[in-house]
Length: 601
Image (cartoon, rainbow, N blue to C red):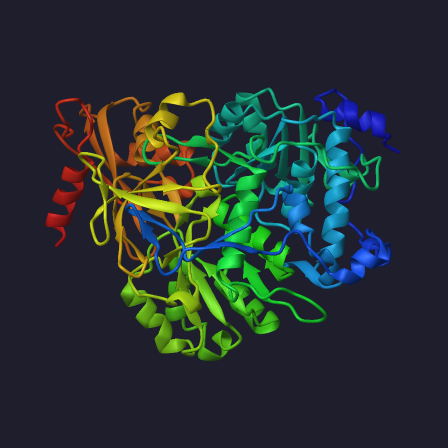
């Protein structure tokens, strides 16, 4: 039998081979269902620190000195992420919280907390201490939120990564984040091995799944067995300043950068959305709860801190899918009858246009929340040709840098206005700035949107230059989006200053692909733009100044090795004599985009 001591020696990259263990876990009835956590008087008062409280009302005078305010602000509780998620647990701990859409394995909300505490203890058993970074390289699975909660409960930082990334991409993020532990899946064992060869500073690997996990990794159940304390205490943290999550985003421009999000940022996003829209999710109690199917990736801030964290906080039943498969998704809609769905436009298009989806599949829905990219009026019209009229199609606006969303819907203050991203969430402020002079503009005037509030990130990790470009002296954060707000406080996004390409809602930085392409022998100069694509929204297209021998096939074979699927040059490769540039040497991507548009109009 493998001892706890030998497991620790193994994890820290020792030479001992781990014993084989099953990755399936047997769950007992949650002890929290019967063990009181608070005294009887407090329990019967049903008080909760995590419920939204209106702090200040701004409606109807929302524009003050050319600053747009929300209808009202919400008090942000000074509590940790886990305290917030568990603040109302007594009302729904007996209800299903996470359901694996593949196997049907289910965790009650009370069991989610139990297992998260075990993860917290096990992480400490690895010798991790406050501030250490854990890389999370996983598809959606019911272990994902346990890892997030366990890590944050122990004062650690997680850096989530797309499991479709290549080994070079993964190694770059691990290096930039200074991660020392990696939690991954056995389906990508070979890729993890290649990653460790590029970044040898990972001292412990935990692998979830049934396939071969590699010689030096430990299985999930053995990892949980490292837990030595049933009820570990929250590691003291500064909720305002300590980094909780370090996702990577390209920001307004450039290559991916680590976005430092505090536990306060995460809590602010969730309580602001819930407090703004009473129908966003219905708070569970008794035997009543909302149901959703979670297919948005948990490594993305939308899936991680909007759908996942929001659903756990509100007591929803969350059907977890590792990937989108049309037949499986429709079958789960029939079985579980979701009451709301969080989508990106391609998924909304699937519901609207796929013959697999009928009107009957959509009748259980109260709403769909669509984000990450604009839907456009045509898609919404197509959706309502099939969906019942009572299903609300809600669009919002947000980013990794605000830990999720910063606009949403409140029917009491104007409802939904088509073409807009609707209204500012509580606790945020926005200004419109002239793109040439940086002068603050007023109602109906177009410029760059800048934003301020407790949901805004701490900054980019180890990148002072990017922080100076992004934040001004008063703390306003540039979004790179061009837009305006109307007299009713609705926000409209009309263009992007930033040149990011959005492929199925995922960010692709032209500068990153250009940098990769420059590593290919035969590439003398290069520019990448995004072009429209019906299925993906946008796809990357490369313009290359080449040596005569270089072919498009060689370019595509090289990119297949270097970057993940959504970053491939699906828009094609065009060989050109020169790349258009400004006098300062900046690539004029707008000229390339305009030329492509003219050729295809």
